[in-house]
Length: 71
Picture 1: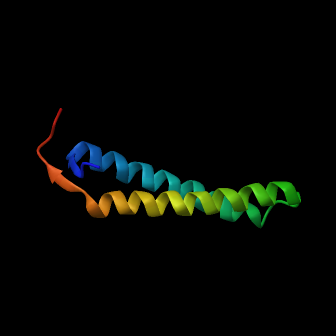
Picture 2: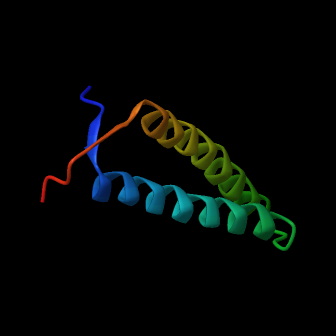
C-alpha cells in the first residue's frame, strides 16, 4: 500500500476518524438509555466495529507520509 498522501487526503482521514468517534460515543451513550436487548446488542456491536475501524484509521495515519498536494 502506498503511504504517500496529499494534505487533503490526510485531512479527510482525520475527518472520518472524528465522525466515527462521535458515532461510537453516541452508541455507547444510547446503550444506557435503551431497554430492548436486541437494540443493546446492535449498539454493542457498533461500538466494537467502530473501535476496530478507528484502530485501522490510526494505523493509516501513523504510516502516512505527507507529500505535495495532488489536486
